[in-house]
Length: 510
Figure (cartoon, rainbow, N blue to C red):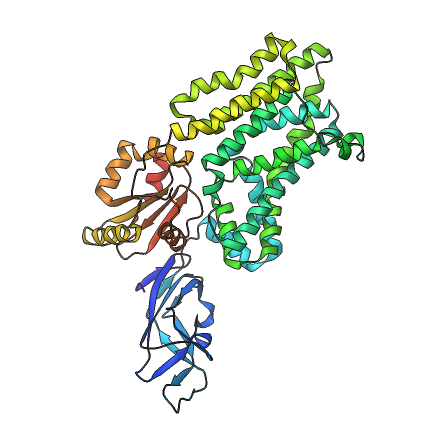
Protein backbone atom coordinates (compact mmCIF):
# COMPACT_ATOMS: atom_id res chain seq x y z
CA UNK A 1 0.00 0.00 0.00
CA UNK A 2 1.36 3.49 -0.86
CA UNK A 3 2.59 5.73 1.96
CA UNK A 4 0.44 8.60 0.68
CA UNK A 5 -2.67 8.69 -1.50
CA UNK A 6 -5.81 10.75 -2.16
CA UNK A 7 -9.51 10.08 -1.84
CA UNK A 8 -11.01 8.71 -5.02
CA UNK A 9 -7.74 7.35 -6.38
CA UNK A 10 -7.66 3.58 -7.09
CA UNK A 11 -5.61 1.59 -4.58
CA UNK A 12 -4.45 -2.01 -5.01
CA UNK A 13 -2.73 -3.87 -2.17
CA UNK A 14 -2.06 -7.36 -0.83
CA UNK A 15 -2.87 -8.42 2.72
CA UNK A 16 -0.95 -11.52 3.84
CA UNK A 17 -2.44 -13.52 6.71
CA UNK A 18 0.13 -15.90 8.19
CA UNK A 19 -1.71 -18.95 9.59
CA UNK A 20 0.53 -21.07 11.91
CA UNK A 21 1.28 -24.68 11.06
CA UNK A 22 -1.43 -27.04 12.34
CA UNK A 23 -4.13 -24.39 12.04
CA UNK A 24 -6.47 -23.17 9.30
CA UNK A 25 -9.08 -20.46 8.90
CA UNK A 26 -12.53 -20.79 7.36
CA UNK A 27 -13.16 -18.51 4.37
CA UNK A 28 -16.79 -18.05 5.42
CA UNK A 29 -15.63 -16.10 8.49
CA UNK A 30 -12.82 -14.19 6.73
CA UNK A 31 -13.75 -10.50 6.49
CA UNK A 32 -11.74 -7.40 5.66
CA UNK A 33 -12.96 -3.84 6.15
CA UNK A 34 -11.62 -0.44 7.16
CA UNK A 35 -12.52 1.14 10.47
CA UNK A 36 -14.97 4.06 10.24
CA UNK A 37 -15.72 3.16 6.61
CA UNK A 38 -12.75 5.15 5.31
CA UNK A 39 -12.15 2.75 2.40
CA UNK A 40 -14.56 1.35 -0.21
CA UNK A 41 -13.56 -2.14 -1.38
CA UNK A 42 -14.48 -2.70 -5.02
CA UNK A 43 -13.04 -6.19 -5.29
CA UNK A 44 -11.44 -8.69 -2.90
CA UNK A 45 -9.73 -11.84 -4.15
CA UNK A 46 -8.82 -14.75 -1.87
CA UNK A 47 -6.96 -17.96 -2.77
CA UNK A 48 -8.94 -21.09 -3.51
CA UNK A 49 -9.08 -23.28 -0.41
CA UNK A 50 -9.78 -26.88 0.47
CA UNK A 51 -13.47 -27.78 0.48
CA UNK A 52 -14.63 -29.68 3.56
CA UNK A 53 -17.97 -30.58 5.14
CA UNK A 54 -17.60 -27.50 7.38
CA UNK A 55 -16.79 -25.12 4.52
CA UNK A 56 -13.79 -23.95 2.49
CA UNK A 57 -10.58 -23.67 4.54
CA UNK A 58 -7.17 -22.05 3.87
CA UNK A 59 -3.85 -22.20 5.70
CA UNK A 60 -0.21 -21.11 5.51
CA UNK A 61 0.36 -17.69 3.98
CA UNK A 62 -3.06 -16.52 2.80
CA UNK A 63 -2.69 -13.75 0.19
CA UNK A 64 -5.75 -11.46 0.01
CA UNK A 65 -5.75 -8.96 -2.89
CA UNK A 66 -7.88 -5.87 -2.38
CA UNK A 67 -8.82 -3.23 -4.95
CA UNK A 68 -10.71 -0.06 -4.03
CA UNK A 69 -10.35 3.57 -3.00
CA UNK A 70 -10.36 5.75 0.09
CA UNK A 71 -13.52 7.82 0.49
CA UNK A 72 -12.46 9.89 3.52
CA UNK A 73 -9.34 11.80 4.47
CA UNK A 74 -7.58 10.03 7.34
CA UNK A 75 -4.17 9.57 8.93
CA UNK A 76 -3.08 6.01 9.56
CA UNK A 77 -6.34 4.22 8.59
CA UNK A 78 -7.01 0.95 10.36
CA UNK A 79 -7.91 -2.36 8.69
CA UNK A 80 -10.19 -4.72 10.62
CA UNK A 81 -9.57 -8.38 9.74
CA UNK A 82 -12.10 -10.89 11.00
CA UNK A 83 -11.39 -14.63 11.02
CA UNK A 84 -12.01 -17.91 12.80
CA UNK A 85 -9.03 -20.17 13.52
CA UNK A 86 -9.32 -23.94 13.89
CA UNK A 87 -6.80 -26.61 14.82
CA UNK A 88 -6.21 -29.64 12.60
CA UNK A 89 -5.89 -33.33 13.45
CA UNK A 90 -7.98 -35.86 15.36
CA UNK A 91 -8.93 -33.56 18.23
CA UNK A 92 -9.60 -30.55 15.99
CA UNK A 93 -11.39 -27.62 17.55
CA UNK A 94 -12.44 -24.15 16.39
CA UNK A 95 -12.08 -20.91 18.34
CA UNK A 96 -14.69 -18.13 18.36
CA UNK A 97 -14.37 -15.61 15.50
CA UNK A 98 -12.12 -12.66 16.34
CA UNK A 99 -11.30 -9.29 14.78
CA UNK A 100 -7.74 -7.99 14.60
CA UNK A 101 -6.85 -4.36 13.85
CA UNK A 102 -3.92 -3.45 11.58
CA UNK A 103 -2.60 0.10 11.30
CA UNK A 104 -1.58 0.92 7.73
CA UNK A 105 0.51 4.07 8.29
CA UNK A 106 -1.01 5.60 5.14
CA UNK A 107 -1.78 9.32 4.88
CA UNK A 108 -4.94 9.96 2.88
CA UNK A 109 -5.43 13.50 1.57
CA UNK A 110 -8.45 15.01 -0.14
CA UNK A 111 -8.41 14.31 -3.86
CA UNK A 112 -10.38 15.66 -6.77
CA UNK A 113 -13.00 13.11 -7.78
CA UNK A 114 -13.42 12.36 -11.46
CA UNK A 115 -16.84 12.40 -13.12
CA UNK A 116 -17.15 8.60 -13.07
CA UNK A 117 -16.22 8.51 -9.37
CA UNK A 118 -18.88 11.12 -8.57
CA UNK A 119 -21.47 9.13 -10.50
CA UNK A 120 -20.47 5.88 -8.77
CA UNK A 121 -20.69 7.63 -5.40
CA UNK A 122 -24.16 8.95 -6.23
CA UNK A 123 -25.33 5.50 -7.28
CA UNK A 124 -24.27 4.11 -3.92
CA UNK A 125 -25.69 6.95 -1.81
CA UNK A 126 -29.28 7.57 -2.96
CA UNK A 127 -31.64 5.81 -5.36
CA UNK A 128 -33.55 9.03 -6.14
CA UNK A 129 -30.37 11.01 -6.75
CA UNK A 130 -29.07 8.15 -8.90
CA UNK A 131 -32.24 8.15 -11.04
CA UNK A 132 -32.05 11.94 -11.55
CA UNK A 133 -28.34 11.82 -12.40
CA UNK A 134 -28.79 8.88 -14.78
CA UNK A 135 -31.68 10.65 -16.54
CA UNK A 136 -29.50 13.76 -17.04
CA UNK A 137 -26.69 11.48 -18.24
CA UNK A 138 -29.08 10.05 -20.83
CA UNK A 139 -29.89 13.55 -22.10
CA UNK A 140 -26.15 14.32 -22.40
CA UNK A 141 -25.53 11.00 -24.18
CA UNK A 142 -28.05 11.98 -26.85
CA UNK A 143 -25.54 14.59 -28.06
CA UNK A 144 -22.65 12.13 -28.57
CA UNK A 145 -21.26 11.48 -32.09
CA UNK A 146 -22.82 8.00 -32.34
CA UNK A 147 -26.27 9.61 -32.20
CA UNK A 148 -25.71 12.37 -34.80
CA UNK A 149 -26.43 10.18 -37.87
CA UNK A 150 -29.64 8.91 -36.27
CA UNK A 151 -31.20 12.38 -35.88
CA UNK A 152 -32.00 12.85 -39.60
CA UNK A 153 -33.26 9.26 -39.68
CA UNK A 154 -35.68 10.06 -36.85
CA UNK A 155 -36.93 13.06 -38.81
CA UNK A 156 -37.18 10.89 -41.91
CA UNK A 157 -39.17 8.05 -40.40
CA UNK A 158 -41.38 10.00 -38.01
CA UNK A 159 -41.88 12.82 -40.50
CA UNK A 160 -43.07 10.42 -43.18
CA UNK A 161 -45.38 8.41 -40.88
CA UNK A 162 -46.96 11.25 -38.89
CA UNK A 163 -48.32 13.03 -41.99
CA UNK A 164 -47.97 16.47 -40.42
CA UNK A 165 -49.88 15.63 -37.24
CA UNK A 166 -48.00 16.74 -34.10
CA UNK A 167 -49.84 14.30 -31.84
CA UNK A 168 -49.12 11.43 -34.21
CA UNK A 169 -45.47 12.51 -34.40
CA UNK A 170 -45.34 12.56 -30.60
CA UNK A 171 -46.87 9.05 -30.27
CA UNK A 172 -44.51 7.56 -32.89
CA UNK A 173 -41.56 9.25 -31.13
CA UNK A 174 -42.63 7.67 -27.82
CA UNK A 175 -42.62 4.26 -29.55
CA UNK A 176 -39.09 4.98 -30.77
CA UNK A 177 -37.95 5.92 -27.26
CA UNK A 178 -39.49 2.72 -25.86
CA UNK A 179 -37.38 0.83 -28.41
CA UNK A 180 -34.25 2.58 -27.11
CA UNK A 181 -35.32 1.80 -23.54
CA UNK A 182 -35.79 -1.88 -24.41
CA UNK A 183 -32.25 -2.12 -25.80
CA UNK A 184 -30.66 -0.47 -22.77
CA UNK A 185 -32.76 -2.44 -20.31
CA UNK A 186 -31.53 -5.64 -21.95
CA UNK A 187 -27.95 -4.33 -21.68
CA UNK A 188 -28.55 -3.65 -18.00
CA UNK A 189 -29.81 -7.18 -17.36
CA UNK A 190 -26.90 -8.68 -19.32
CA UNK A 191 -24.40 -6.57 -17.35
CA UNK A 192 -26.01 -7.58 -14.06
CA UNK A 193 -25.94 -11.24 -15.04
CA UNK A 194 -22.49 -11.50 -16.65
CA UNK A 195 -20.56 -8.32 -15.80
CA UNK A 196 -19.12 -8.47 -19.32
CA UNK A 197 -18.28 -5.77 -21.84
CA UNK A 198 -21.12 -4.67 -24.11
CA UNK A 199 -19.12 -2.75 -26.71
CA UNK A 200 -17.52 -5.85 -28.18
CA UNK A 201 -20.80 -7.23 -29.53
CA UNK A 202 -22.41 -3.96 -30.63
CA UNK A 203 -19.29 -3.02 -32.60
CA UNK A 204 -18.65 -6.48 -34.05
CA UNK A 205 -18.84 -7.09 -37.84
CA UNK A 206 -21.96 -9.26 -37.57
CA UNK A 207 -23.82 -6.45 -35.82
CA UNK A 208 -22.55 -3.84 -38.27
CA UNK A 209 -23.92 -5.96 -41.12
CA UNK A 210 -27.24 -6.32 -39.27
CA UNK A 211 -27.55 -2.55 -38.83
CA UNK A 212 -26.67 -1.98 -42.48
CA UNK A 213 -29.45 -4.42 -43.41
CA UNK A 214 -31.97 -2.57 -41.19
CA UNK A 215 -31.22 0.86 -42.65
CA UNK A 216 -31.21 -0.38 -46.24
CA UNK A 217 -34.57 -2.07 -45.59
CA UNK A 218 -35.90 1.22 -44.17
CA UNK A 219 -34.57 3.06 -47.23
CA UNK A 220 -36.32 0.68 -49.64
CA UNK A 221 -39.53 1.27 -47.69
CA UNK A 222 -39.17 5.03 -48.21
CA UNK A 223 -38.64 4.46 -51.97
CA UNK A 224 -42.00 2.66 -52.08
CA UNK A 225 -40.86 -0.92 -52.68
CA UNK A 226 -42.88 -2.12 -49.68
CA UNK A 227 -44.37 -0.93 -46.37
CA UNK A 228 -42.98 -1.87 -42.96
CA UNK A 229 -45.89 -2.32 -40.60
CA UNK A 230 -47.55 -4.76 -38.18
CA UNK A 231 -48.89 -8.06 -39.59
CA UNK A 232 -52.44 -7.70 -40.96
CA UNK A 233 -54.07 -9.78 -38.20
CA UNK A 234 -52.45 -7.54 -35.56
CA UNK A 235 -53.21 -4.34 -37.42
CA UNK A 236 -56.95 -5.01 -37.56
CA UNK A 237 -57.08 -5.24 -33.77
CA UNK A 238 -55.34 -1.90 -33.28
CA UNK A 239 -56.51 1.65 -33.80
CA UNK A 240 -55.55 3.20 -37.14
CA UNK A 241 -53.19 5.60 -35.40
CA UNK A 242 -51.06 2.66 -34.25
CA UNK A 243 -49.83 2.04 -37.81
CA UNK A 244 -46.10 2.62 -38.05
CA UNK A 245 -45.41 2.14 -34.35
CA UNK A 246 -43.68 -1.21 -34.84
CA UNK A 247 -41.21 0.37 -37.28
CA UNK A 248 -40.53 3.19 -34.83
CA UNK A 249 -40.01 0.70 -32.00
CA UNK A 250 -37.51 -1.35 -34.07
CA UNK A 251 -35.73 1.82 -35.14
CA UNK A 252 -35.50 2.83 -31.48
CA UNK A 253 -33.89 -0.51 -30.63
CA UNK A 254 -31.36 0.05 -33.44
CA UNK A 255 -30.68 3.57 -32.17
CA UNK A 256 -29.86 2.23 -28.72
CA UNK A 257 -27.46 -0.26 -30.28
CA UNK A 258 -25.78 2.45 -32.38
CA UNK A 259 -25.17 4.64 -29.35
CA UNK A 260 -23.91 1.79 -27.14
CA UNK A 261 -20.29 1.93 -28.47
CA UNK A 262 -20.08 5.59 -27.39
CA UNK A 263 -18.76 4.54 -24.01
CA UNK A 264 -18.83 7.90 -22.24
CA UNK A 265 -17.97 8.01 -18.52
CA UNK A 266 -21.56 7.95 -17.26
CA UNK A 267 -22.77 4.90 -19.19
CA UNK A 268 -19.51 3.01 -18.51
CA UNK A 269 -19.75 3.64 -14.77
CA UNK A 270 -23.45 2.79 -14.82
CA UNK A 271 -22.93 -0.58 -16.50
CA UNK A 272 -19.90 -1.33 -14.31
CA UNK A 273 -21.88 -0.55 -11.16
CA UNK A 274 -24.82 -2.68 -12.32
CA UNK A 275 -22.42 -5.55 -13.09
CA UNK A 276 -20.96 -5.34 -9.57
CA UNK A 277 -24.35 -5.29 -7.84
CA UNK A 278 -25.63 -8.26 -9.82
CA UNK A 279 -29.17 -6.89 -9.35
CA UNK A 280 -31.41 -7.61 -12.34
CA UNK A 281 -34.05 -5.12 -11.08
CA UNK A 282 -31.55 -2.27 -10.72
CA UNK A 283 -29.97 -3.20 -14.04
CA UNK A 284 -33.36 -2.92 -15.77
CA UNK A 285 -34.62 0.21 -13.97
CA UNK A 286 -31.40 2.26 -14.17
CA UNK A 287 -30.78 1.52 -17.86
CA UNK A 288 -34.46 2.16 -18.66
CA UNK A 289 -34.13 5.51 -16.88
CA UNK A 290 -30.99 6.30 -18.89
CA UNK A 291 -32.81 5.51 -22.13
CA UNK A 292 -35.72 7.80 -21.21
CA UNK A 293 -33.27 10.66 -20.72
CA UNK A 294 -31.63 9.86 -24.02
CA UNK A 295 -35.06 9.84 -25.68
CA UNK A 296 -35.99 13.42 -24.76
CA UNK A 297 -34.18 14.76 -27.85
CA UNK A 298 -35.89 12.23 -30.12
CA UNK A 299 -39.36 13.07 -28.78
CA UNK A 300 -38.78 16.77 -29.48
CA UNK A 301 -37.38 16.14 -32.94
CA UNK A 302 -39.99 13.52 -33.81
CA UNK A 303 -42.93 15.66 -32.67
CA UNK A 304 -41.99 18.54 -34.95
CA UNK A 305 -40.69 16.38 -37.82
CA UNK A 306 -44.32 15.76 -38.75
CA UNK A 307 -44.87 19.51 -39.15
CA UNK A 308 -41.82 19.78 -41.41
CA UNK A 309 -43.01 16.86 -43.51
CA UNK A 310 -46.48 18.40 -43.87
CA UNK A 311 -45.33 21.70 -45.39
CA UNK A 312 -45.39 20.57 -49.07
CA UNK A 313 -49.02 19.86 -49.97
CA UNK A 314 -48.67 18.50 -53.50
CA UNK A 315 -48.60 14.71 -53.82
CA UNK A 316 -45.70 14.66 -56.29
CA UNK A 317 -43.56 16.82 -54.04
CA UNK A 318 -44.29 14.59 -51.08
CA UNK A 319 -42.99 11.59 -53.04
CA UNK A 320 -39.73 13.49 -53.60
CA UNK A 321 -39.55 14.23 -49.88
CA UNK A 322 -39.85 10.49 -49.16
CA UNK A 323 -37.04 9.85 -51.66
CA UNK A 324 -34.85 12.30 -49.74
CA UNK A 325 -35.66 10.48 -46.52
CA UNK A 326 -34.81 7.16 -48.21
CA UNK A 327 -31.45 8.54 -49.33
CA UNK A 328 -30.75 9.54 -45.71
CA UNK A 329 -31.25 5.90 -44.68
CA UNK A 330 -28.89 4.69 -47.42
CA UNK A 331 -26.25 7.23 -46.34
CA UNK A 332 -26.64 6.01 -42.75
CA UNK A 333 -26.15 2.41 -43.91
CA UNK A 334 -22.91 3.45 -45.62
CA UNK A 335 -21.68 5.34 -42.55
CA UNK A 336 -22.27 2.45 -40.17
CA UNK A 337 -20.86 -0.25 -42.45
CA UNK A 338 -17.79 1.80 -43.44
CA UNK A 339 -15.49 0.03 -40.87
CA UNK A 340 -15.91 -3.31 -42.68
CA UNK A 341 -16.16 -2.04 -46.29
CA UNK A 342 -12.53 -0.93 -46.51
CA UNK A 343 -11.33 -0.47 -50.11
CA UNK A 344 -14.74 -1.63 -51.39
CA UNK A 345 -16.50 1.42 -49.91
CA UNK A 346 -17.18 3.21 -53.23
CA UNK A 347 -18.27 -0.01 -54.94
CA UNK A 348 -20.82 -0.59 -52.21
CA UNK A 349 -21.88 3.05 -52.37
CA UNK A 350 -23.02 2.41 -55.95
CA UNK A 351 -24.69 -0.86 -54.94
CA UNK A 352 -26.49 0.77 -51.97
CA UNK A 353 -27.86 3.57 -54.16
CA UNK A 354 -29.06 1.24 -56.93
CA UNK A 355 -32.60 0.97 -55.44
CA UNK A 356 -32.79 4.77 -55.26
CA UNK A 357 -31.77 5.15 -58.93
CA UNK A 358 -34.34 2.55 -60.01
CA UNK A 359 -37.09 4.25 -57.95
CA UNK A 360 -36.30 7.69 -59.39
CA UNK A 361 -35.67 6.83 -63.05
CA UNK A 362 -37.52 3.56 -63.66
CA UNK A 363 -40.49 3.68 -61.32
CA UNK A 364 -42.32 0.85 -63.16
CA UNK A 365 -39.84 -1.63 -61.68
CA UNK A 366 -40.68 -0.62 -58.10
CA UNK A 367 -42.52 -3.47 -56.41
CA UNK A 368 -42.35 -5.64 -53.32
CA UNK A 369 -40.71 -8.45 -55.32
CA UNK A 370 -38.05 -6.13 -56.76
CA UNK A 371 -37.41 -4.64 -53.31
CA UNK A 372 -36.80 -8.03 -51.72
CA UNK A 373 -34.48 -9.06 -54.59
CA UNK A 374 -32.48 -5.83 -54.20
CA UNK A 375 -32.32 -6.29 -50.43
CA UNK A 376 -30.86 -9.79 -50.92
CA UNK A 377 -28.44 -8.62 -53.63
CA UNK A 378 -27.07 -5.96 -51.29
CA UNK A 379 -27.00 -8.03 -48.09
CA UNK A 380 -25.13 -11.08 -49.43
CA UNK A 381 -22.08 -9.08 -50.68
CA UNK A 382 -22.21 -7.10 -47.43
CA UNK A 383 -21.80 -10.33 -45.46
CA UNK A 384 -19.04 -11.56 -47.79
CA UNK A 385 -17.00 -8.34 -47.72
CA UNK A 386 -16.19 -8.90 -44.04
CA UNK A 387 -14.03 -11.88 -45.03
CA UNK A 388 -12.41 -10.02 -47.95
CA UNK A 389 -11.41 -7.08 -45.76
CA UNK A 390 -10.30 -9.09 -42.73
CA UNK A 391 -7.40 -7.30 -41.07
CA UNK A 392 -4.17 -8.81 -39.90
CA UNK A 393 -4.07 -8.68 -36.13
CA UNK A 394 -1.91 -5.91 -34.77
CA UNK A 395 -0.63 -5.17 -31.29
CA UNK A 396 -0.13 -7.74 -28.53
CA UNK A 397 -2.51 -10.69 -28.95
CA UNK A 398 -1.45 -13.06 -26.16
CA UNK A 399 0.49 -13.30 -22.88
CA UNK A 400 -1.09 -10.02 -21.83
CA UNK A 401 -0.21 -10.34 -18.13
CA UNK A 402 3.49 -11.00 -18.91
CA UNK A 403 3.75 -7.97 -21.19
CA UNK A 404 2.04 -5.75 -18.62
CA UNK A 405 4.34 -6.96 -15.82
CA UNK A 406 7.45 -6.34 -17.93
CA UNK A 407 6.16 -2.90 -18.91
CA UNK A 408 5.59 -1.96 -15.25
CA UNK A 409 9.10 -3.15 -14.33
CA UNK A 410 10.62 -1.13 -17.18
CA UNK A 411 8.59 1.95 -16.25
CA UNK A 412 9.77 1.74 -12.65
CA UNK A 413 13.44 1.40 -13.61
CA UNK A 414 13.23 4.30 -16.10
CA UNK A 415 10.98 6.51 -13.93
CA UNK A 416 8.19 6.45 -16.51
CA UNK A 417 4.50 5.51 -16.58
CA UNK A 418 2.75 2.72 -18.49
CA UNK A 419 0.08 3.61 -21.06
CA UNK A 420 -2.10 0.64 -22.06
CA UNK A 421 -4.44 0.84 -25.05
CA UNK A 422 -7.12 -1.90 -25.00
CA UNK A 423 -8.50 -2.12 -28.55
CA UNK A 424 -10.04 -4.45 -31.14
CA UNK A 425 -9.66 -4.72 -34.92
CA UNK A 426 -13.34 -4.00 -35.56
CA UNK A 427 -13.69 -0.91 -33.34
CA UNK A 428 -14.09 2.30 -35.40
CA UNK A 429 -13.19 4.56 -32.46
CA UNK A 430 -10.00 2.50 -32.02
CA UNK A 431 -9.11 3.21 -35.65
CA UNK A 432 -9.63 6.94 -35.06
CA UNK A 433 -7.37 6.81 -32.00
CA UNK A 434 -4.67 5.07 -34.03
CA UNK A 435 -4.99 7.35 -37.05
CA UNK A 436 -5.28 10.73 -35.38
CA UNK A 437 -3.86 10.44 -31.85
CA UNK A 438 -1.17 7.75 -31.61
CA UNK A 439 0.33 8.93 -34.92
CA UNK A 440 0.46 12.59 -33.81
CA UNK A 441 4.05 13.90 -33.50
CA UNK A 442 3.50 15.52 -30.10
CA UNK A 443 1.86 12.38 -28.71
CA UNK A 444 4.65 10.17 -30.09
CA UNK A 445 7.26 12.43 -28.46
CA UNK A 446 5.43 12.31 -25.14
CA UNK A 447 5.13 8.52 -25.18
CA UNK A 448 8.77 8.11 -26.18
CA UNK A 449 10.06 10.30 -23.35
CA UNK A 450 7.58 9.59 -20.55
CA UNK A 451 5.90 6.24 -21.03
CA UNK A 452 6.10 2.56 -21.84
CA UNK A 453 3.36 2.16 -24.43
CA UNK A 454 1.39 -1.10 -24.80
CA UNK A 455 -1.30 -1.85 -27.39
CA UNK A 456 -3.32 -4.89 -26.33
CA UNK A 457 -5.43 -6.40 -29.10
CA UNK A 458 -8.53 -7.91 -27.48
CA UNK A 459 -10.23 -9.03 -30.71
CA UNK A 460 -9.94 -12.74 -29.93
CA UNK A 461 -12.12 -13.88 -27.05
CA UNK A 462 -9.91 -16.20 -25.01
CA UNK A 463 -9.86 -17.14 -21.36
CA UNK A 464 -6.71 -15.05 -20.95
CA UNK A 465 -8.17 -11.96 -22.61
CA UNK A 466 -11.36 -12.17 -20.52
CA UNK A 467 -9.31 -12.41 -17.31
CA UNK A 468 -7.32 -9.30 -18.24
CA UNK A 469 -10.48 -7.37 -19.16
CA UNK A 470 -12.02 -8.32 -15.83
CA UNK A 471 -8.87 -7.46 -13.87
CA UNK A 472 -8.61 -3.98 -15.38
CA UNK A 473 -12.39 -3.45 -15.51
CA UNK A 474 -12.50 -2.83 -19.27
CA UNK A 475 -16.09 -2.82 -20.55
CA UNK A 476 -15.75 -1.00 -23.87
CA UNK A 477 -13.23 -0.09 -26.55
CA UNK A 478 -10.96 1.71 -26.77
CA UNK A 479 -10.04 2.00 -23.11
CA UNK A 480 -6.70 3.64 -22.30
CA UNK A 481 -5.26 3.21 -18.81
CA UNK A 482 -2.31 5.05 -17.22
CA UNK A 483 -0.33 3.05 -14.62
CA UNK A 484 2.72 4.04 -12.57
CA UNK A 485 5.83 1.98 -11.81
CA UNK A 486 4.18 0.48 -8.71
CA UNK A 487 1.30 -0.95 -10.78
CA UNK A 488 -1.16 1.64 -9.46
CA UNK A 489 -3.76 3.02 -11.86
CA UNK A 490 -3.43 6.79 -12.21
CA UNK A 491 -6.14 7.64 -14.71
CA UNK A 492 -8.12 6.25 -17.66
CA UNK A 493 -10.29 7.41 -20.54
CA UNK A 494 -12.76 5.75 -22.90
CA UNK A 495 -13.34 6.18 -26.62
CA UNK A 496 -11.58 8.47 -29.08
CA UNK A 497 -9.82 11.59 -27.79
CA UNK A 498 -7.92 14.17 -29.80
CA UNK A 499 -4.13 14.56 -29.33
CA UNK A 500 -4.54 17.79 -27.36
CA UNK A 501 -6.93 16.19 -24.88
CA UNK A 502 -4.70 13.12 -24.52
CA UNK A 503 -1.68 15.29 -23.67
CA UNK A 504 -3.73 17.30 -21.19
CA UNK A 505 -4.96 14.07 -19.54
CA UNK A 506 -1.41 12.68 -19.32
CA UNK A 507 0.08 15.95 -18.04
CA UNK A 508 1.87 15.56 -14.70
CA UNK A 509 1.28 11.81 -14.32
CA UNK A 510 4.14 9.91 -12.68
